[in-house]
Amino acid sequence: MEEKLARIEAVLEEKVRPALRAHGGEIAVDHLEGKVLYVKLLGQCAGCPSADITNETIVQEELVRALPELVEQVSVIQTVSDELWEQAKRLLRDHHL
Image (cartoon, rainbow, N blue to C red; front, side, top):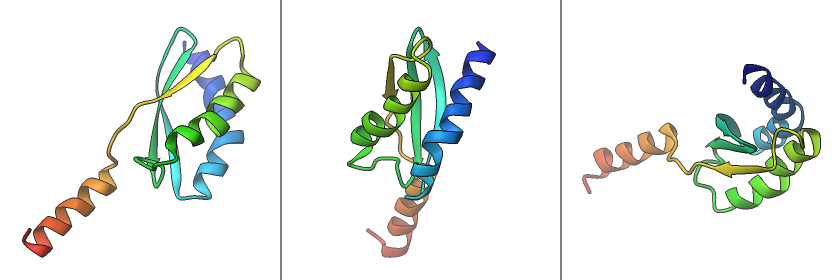
């Protein structure tokens, strides 16, 4: 399994992360289940309305093209980033809502 994840990480680093980082985003692998890779979009990509499109057109496309024997689908685990939680806390604290 470690070898599979290392191969996935190499594709993410070369093909996916540069595009995400250009928009203040990042990606983290959560787990691989069969040929479905579960990922978390982080930074500006977390909770972005375009996250599904980003996943389909960048993440999944690149991984399936490079590693069809390992990945057939990429599924985004929706989370709220630590940054967003901190912003929400500051707003509530500073504006006495």
